[in-house]
Structure formats: structure tokens, C-alpha cells
Length: 120
Length: 511
Image 1 (cartoon, one colour):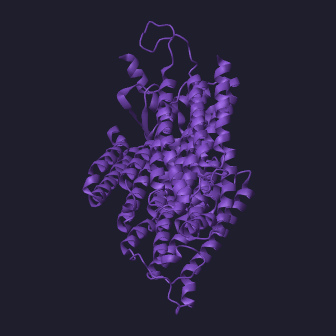
Image 2: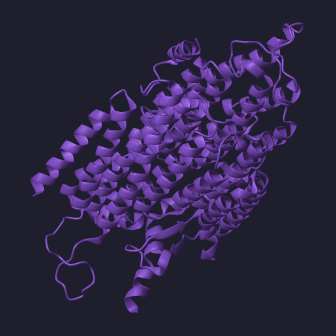
Image 3: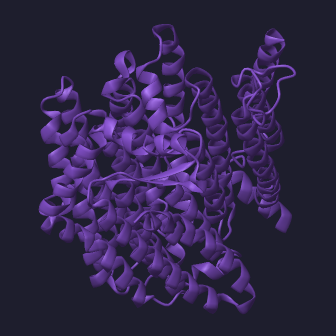
């Protein structure tokens, strides 16, 4: 169980970092998404997950599941979701305005060239 | 009393929602409402500062949950100072945006500005690391919208970099927060400080790793070497009021370092005490030198000002990294000076750019500008203050920082880099000023490009009132440094902060 969680966090963040370093916007967006998945699993495991433990409701219970990481993960998921939506729209806007999906817009000269090409 | 401290957070949130609702009545209504809200925020911030002046740490328990479990807002002199600075900048940026009609270049300017204020003030007032994350995200989301406000391919490209690097920063923030929660079992800053002091030795490596990861995150916000590359392009290509307002954004990173690292990894932290200081000092010095080179190499005025912002935040990092109370107090004075002056300089650069028409702000084409007397005078004041020449505030701030640096083991390195950077900045600003204002005299006959935007004279008043900060800060340097010293004295007393935050735990248990 521990090994599985550690492995999934590691693989997810490894893939996320690799993709985030790519030069076109779409892989970068996917990379950021993978990174946020990795961090969600990581946050969850930081509360030391227990199997079959109740929530903090029953004062008589001997052990209970830590509620804080769940709240953190929930917040993180919502924020990451909003951010992903935003980055996708921004990437589309950049693709539209820069004429390429390269994250650097492939340099200013090429932008003006492509505009000239369009004009002609 | 504590009701005052939640106002700087609540007012912009409600204001942002109101702005959304009055959107259908058009921009004039939004402008009036925005200015009224910014004015109200300024009043609330002044009142907050007066409350904090007593030297106590005020704590607001949201939902009245006891301290380490519930969410708290904590107000002390530092938070109050930052809130006031934010309110002043917001008012100036909003007024300038209204005067120059920048806000009509895209939708939602006023709403985003209010939400950004909500995020900023929340970050300054929160006493909890996870809430700091949430407020950072609110602030960043609004800033993404603002930095892309208007349009243009360059702005989109710079904005894309800004967004991506900050998203990576948010992920790192969560990793750091997760590790800290896993090792310490709490995210309340005061409680964390207690737990770090009591942490077993075998955990200290993990805690140190998380603390330094957090330093990377704040370093991205503060644009510390090697994480500053997003800043010059993003700031140089966005609209002027946004760039001016964003002068506070880098300071949020510095504030977070002082607040979180200063409290959690302060002198009570045992082996982990001050683990971030060497990194800060080295990062600050390298950033400073690179920023000065950037100022020299800039091809346009706005790019140059963006590098000046970088240089000022680097000086601040050096001041914090010196790890002496006097240096931190000098740093706070410098923070006030550099934020206000950088904002003024961005607005001034925009006015000059507008007058230069098609030549924009480039240092390649010579254009004769109207209004050159006032703009030139403004440029002169801003340049003297930013470069750190006497008699204005930049000089006082720098000399106070260097004065404390003399006792530091790295003093020669610090002196050499700060003074070299100042010299380079001075030379570049002299060159820029003579290019913009003196060279056109020589080619009087050649009338420059046509001016398409009417010279917004009212903008000069806003720039002027921000620039007035330089002589005012120099005149009232005594009282400002006294406040800064009191602030630092309060920051030093971590046990009092912990006590103030934890006090309602007992009352809860008695219920």
C-alpha cells in the first residue's frame, strides 16, 4: 500500500515534470495536470490514511480518519480544476495570437513572418 | 477592535461581487464604485494600522473555532503596514486606469482588481499556511486576468510564462504544505513554530526540506534568482496600472518569507534556526547584480523599470538575509520606498510612452515629446530616488541596509555587489534620461511621430502624488524607521505571537 502510493506519486510527478518542460503548450498543460494529481495523492497520504476508520463524529471512537488532508485535497482539487480550465483557454488564445503552439511563440521574427504570410 | 482587522479582507470580496453586479450599468458606475471601494479600503487600512500600533497581536478566530484547529487571521504591525501599502497602490492604480481609460480595453478590470485586493490582504493577514496558499491562489487567479488585460501577442506570451511558472509554484507549495503537515501535524503558523522547536532530531531533515521547498515557492513570487526570469517580460508587457499595482506582488513573496520562515524557523527552532538565511542572502545578491545588468541592457523604458523592480526586491532579500533586526527594519523602510517608487515609475513610463506615439518606449528612436518639463522632472525625481542618490528615500534605505551589512562576515561581497549594482543602475538611468529628454533638443527641426493619445495631464497628478513618497519618506524618515523598528521588535518576539494565537484554546476547553 505504502509502496503503491509512493510509486504513483513518483511516477505522476516524474511524468508531470517531463511534460511541463516540453516546448508546446498542450503537453505543458497535461504536465501541470499530472503534477496536480501527484500532489493530491501526496497530500492525502500525509494524513496517514487508515482503512475503515470513522470520521471525527463519535467521541467514543478510538481512532478516526484525519479530516484535514481531506479538506486540503478538496480545496486543491477545486483550485487545480479552475487553473487547468484557465490555462487551456490561455493556451488557445496564445495559439491564436502567436500563430504557433510553442510556449515562446517561436520568436518575434517568425510571428511577423507568419502575419505577413497570412496577409499575402 | 478585532472587527477592524477583517475589514481589509471582507471589503474587497464584497466589493468584487458588487462590481460584478453593477457591470450592466456600464464603466462609469464601475469606476465610481471602484474608487469608492479603494477609498474605503484605504480608510479601513489606516484604522487597522492604528489598531495594530498598540503593539499587540490581534487574532480573529473565524467561526470561533479554537486556534490550532480553526482558521485564524492575525494582525500585527507588519500585516497592517502591508495592507496600508496595498490600499495606497490600489487607489493610485485604479485612479490611473480610470484617467487613461485602460479599464475599457477588456472586460472585468474592476472586478479582478477587487478580487486581487482580497487575495493580497488575505495573504497579509492570515495566520495559517494553508490559507496562505488559498489566498495566494485567489491573488494569482486575479493577477492572471489582470496581467492579460488588454491584448497583444507579446502580452499573451509573457502572460503564458507567468501563469505556467506560478502554477508550478502552486504545486510545489502544496508539496511543501503536505510535508510540513505530515511531519508537524499542524498548519497554523504559531503552532508550527512550537512543534518545530519540539521536533525530534531525526525529523529535522524532512522539516528542513519542506521549509526550503517553501522558500522556493516564495522565491518564485519574490522573483529571487534563479526564479526571476518571468518577471521582466510580464511586467514590461502588461498595462501600466497593472504593472504599477504588481509592484506589491513581489513584496508578497518577501512578506511570506519574513512571516512564515521568520516565525517557524526563527531563533527558537533549535537546529533548524534561520535555515533559509544563507540562501536568501546569496539569492538576493546574485539577483541584484543580474537585475542591474538587465537595467543596463534594457531596450525600452518599461523593460528597464521592470528590471528596477527586480533590483529593488533583490535589495530587500539582501536586507532580510542579513538576519539582523536593524537590517530587517531598514528593509521595511526600503520596501515602502521601493514599492511606491516602482509604481510611480511604471505610470511615468506609460505617460512617456503615450507621448512618444509609434516609437513607444524604445531607446532606439528619438522623439520629441510635449509636456517634457513635467515628465522630465518626474523622471529625474524617480531616477534619483530609485538609484539611491541623496537626498531622497532610496539613499536612506540603502545606507541603513549597508550600515548593518558592515558587521556581516560577507560584508565585502555585499558592499561590492550593492554598490556596483547601484552604480550600473545610475549610469543606465542617466543614459535613459538623456536619451529621452535631451537628445530630442538637438534635432529640434525633425518633428517626431504623431501623438495619437491625448496627453493625460491628470495622470501627472497621480504620478506626482506617488513620487511625493520619495521626499516624504526622506523627511519623515525618523518616524517611519521608528515604526519599522517597533515592527521588527514585535516580529522578534515569537513566543508572544504564539501566546496571542493560542489564547482561546483554554477558554474553549473550559466550556
